[in-house]
Length: 596
Image 1 (cartoon, rainbow, N blue to C red):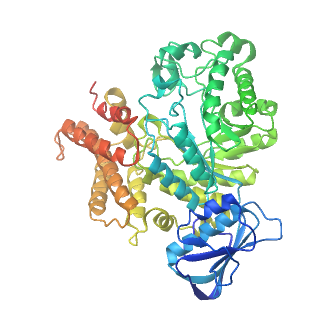
Image 2 (image 1 turned 135 degrees about the vertical axis):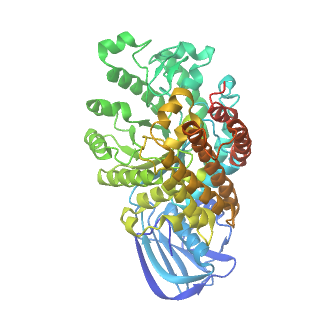
Image 3 (image 1 turned 90 degrees about the vertical axis):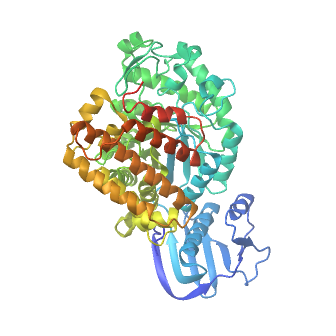
């Protein structure tokens, strides 16, 4: 029986217990309003008003001071008992019980579980600013999934996708989250013991704002700059570090933060690429870039604390000049991010530990810029990040799922990293006994054949079999989306044999997927998403093979093939996501053949 995450201690007992329907629950204490609301998220459980021995599940308050989310779960012939000292502990115990019922049905094996997490915070962050804002229904489903995996923090990475009332020209085409929707999501999380943390980048990554004329006066470089990845941009990306910028973000905070219960707030602050190249050039020459950055970060911190929040911030700039970390207030929380298998988490965690600043460690799903994922890298990245977070006393981990350059990947390619992050952040010692394919199937598909879980890994293995392995992306992703000189450069990193081998593998996977039975709604959706992912990647291969060999036997009319793929992509996008951002995401595909 694969439970996710794997509990700390499982002791098999003799016998079975058959659950009645509905499941009657009682307690030896008065259940408060939050736990009462939480019980309603388990539709098969009815709360008994008495303490009758006929109830099948009993909640018992422990007399020993427990860890916040610890619980014990006992299934015996006479019934089920969950013992905990906190509401969150009872919820985690009920979550485990629900998973056992999902796997075993109503005839439960007798068992004793003692469980608690390794890390205080087990978070997930979804990028909703690179084109793709999920529908409200999709976000509710995501929250249910995270709750089943015992995540307890969620963030939506935001640049411009909150519907600020005075800034419609910025978010007008983005289908943003409204205040009312955010409050509903916050309550939904609260009832599942997940903390929805507000997230608004407030220094760098502000190009979605600064490209508009009425915000250019706030930019470090109003007329544009050279981005190290994207080349020349005709607008700024970083707010100038002055009072006008502080007044601007302060207005945003006043509207955003009241929609959240959390006392945390992630202000971003990463990658202020052009700091010191424009408005602040003279100040940076006099004080140094890192001191200018720190001074402005401290000013933002004052804005956050004035609103009774604790500031989270990305730690990349502070780590460039590590003595500066000691000047940060001790209630700020740094977030160390890194997305490759060999990222130096140990060195960076040691630096933050030495500074006395509390911190999280943020690995990634390795799904962005891939179409089909990089699951081996993702799993190694998650393992390394979690091990160092535990070893250096981090508050927790925050698994990131980015959407760089159009957010073209579909949710299933992120599933391996999600289940690994869930189980390792709860119980690092369970690594050797963790079955990720079975875990993905249990959480997402309920498919006895395991076809779709296996297909996710097969897809990733196929597209990462090239001799050239770029950082933070895949070669096929680059072949798919580039044209001209960039396409020729990428094509020079492979050869016809590698492309044909991958094409053969993808063709076989497509045949298998099309013949697979999808037993659940999510499996049906994932099936179509995986099929389209294979087709997009095959198109990238076709581009390469036709360039390498004019007599290539698979010669097709690329324009016609592309238009068919774009039509399918639009339809698939709208199954889970709002329409805002779709045209922009599609534009990357439309330009992949060098068309204007």
